Image (tube, rainbow, N blue to C red; front, side, top):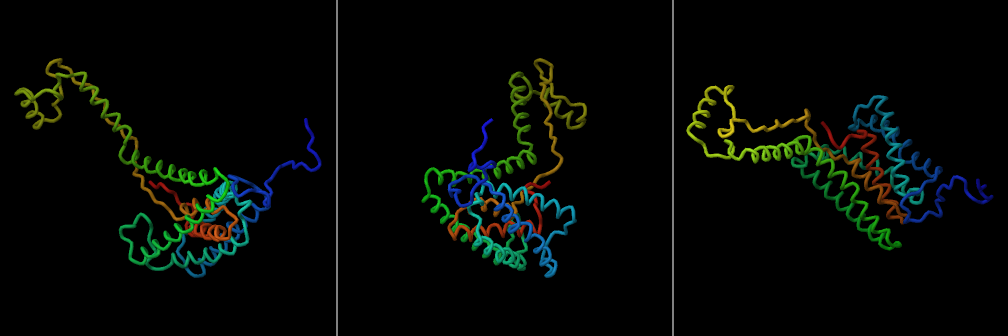
Length: 304
């Protein structure tokens, strides 16, 4: 077994000063500790105290829910830290931008016309539309800068950077497909339709394909009077076509609710550069993400 040299690192943690901006992942335990303290463990209790003091809108969380949210915060935060390259990107600029943005977002969310949600978009008041469109414009401006900055780095980084948007798009598409499957019973309805066509094709002379005869009309008249005695019988073969019944195992309806914590959490993976504009952007998106967690918790994308 080879013995490491005197200068050879044993654990090989990422060096914050030597990690490239094009690195797809990195990890340094000390920077990770600073990251979690700055953006989760310190702001979470502070927000709870301030929100209670000024009676801001929050979910009434139990001690178990607070504990669960903190554990989820550590899990989500670890993924973000590693794959967002925050070993390299973490900066005091991000921390300074974070806290005003956290409480600034909370104050905006307390305005009377912003107390609504994305699923209720058709009923948004004018003020909510102004806030929403302003936020979209700011996000697009930051996105344009980040794509430009990624393009200045060595290839093929910008390709990975832009194409990584396919990950949340894929997950969102899967969510919509699951809703359609659950609410419309898509797969089984398609298979059932195929089986009906297949069963019909095996009985080309059945009442499903033939024109109605006088006997069939009498059968239908009798079925209208006594539905329980009616059967769909093939007049040629005197056998009923075997058509399986449509089975639906879903007893609840699913709905989609895209929360702002999910949107800004995804955006935080892209503010991964050492440029001051990117570090300010990181502080803003991390603040908007954490505001959702502090106030409401990790609410789900799909609800039943």
